[in-house]
Length: 99
Image (cartoon, rainbow, N blue to C red):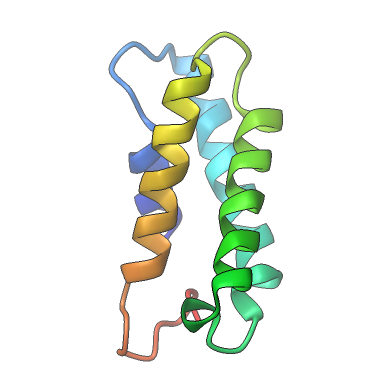
């Protein structure tokens, strides 16, 4: 799961140091979500829970991604991609991490 999140956050112009920082961001974000907002029962079916998940993603990216690597538009695009991934990943298959 962390690799999928990391892959969605990558971009071609990253330095090795930025890649390492983004790996950590991906790991922390996924950990925070799977221990928090994604534990909400049937979160995919509740608009308020979906909004909380999306807010958590955006907030985490804004505060933890390396400074100057992504602009605001890129962060919003990455947040949308991450939310869509979490929303659709293993849907209906008893997903291990994405309840």
